Every structure is written in structure tokens, then in C-alpha cells.
Amino acid sequence: MNQNPARALRPLYIRVVFVLTLFVYIFVTVCVPLPPKKMPLRVRTVTGIDVGSDPDATVIREGVTTRAEVLRQFANFDTGRKGE
Image (cartoon, rainbow, N blue to C red; front, top):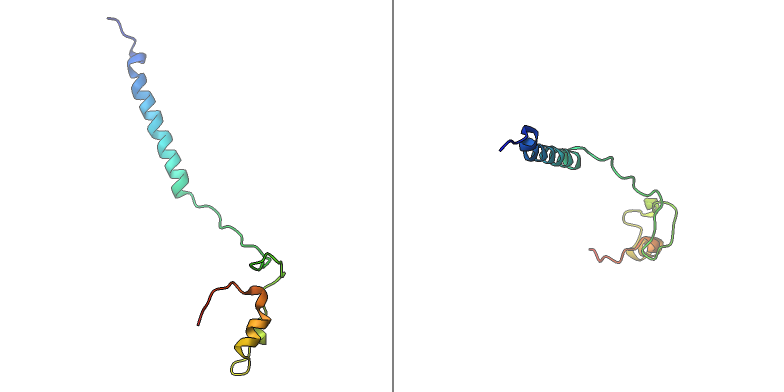
């Protein structure tokens, strides 16, 4: 039986290439950081209305502004979450 030495090494070559490819894939997906995703500059309400900017919290004065006034002024930003 006369075997070609290159043919005998073919399974080893395939394994080495597979392992190197797997290593590169794992390295690229785990170790290479992705740039952070930019957050949208526009604010949208729950109903989808585009309000254009962040809410202005300067209208709230400690001891003066009531909860009802705050709820009325910030109704566009209401998420429906019940807090304190």
C-alpha cells in the first residue's frame, strides 16, 4: 500500500484550519468591543408624539408646585408607571 503523505495529513490540516477559524470567530465576537450606540436626540411620548426636546424641570419649585400641576405640565412624558 503506497499512500501519499499529503493525503494522510489532510484530516489534520482540516482540523487545524477549523480550530483556527473557530478561535478567530470567538475572538472577534467576544474580545473586539463595538462602539456604543448613539441615543436618539428627540424625545417621543408613549403615544408616539414627537415633543422635540427634554422636559423642562425648572417649573418645579419645592414646596410650591403641587402634584396635580406637575402631572398636568408633564402629561406628554407620562409613562403610566405608578410611583410614590
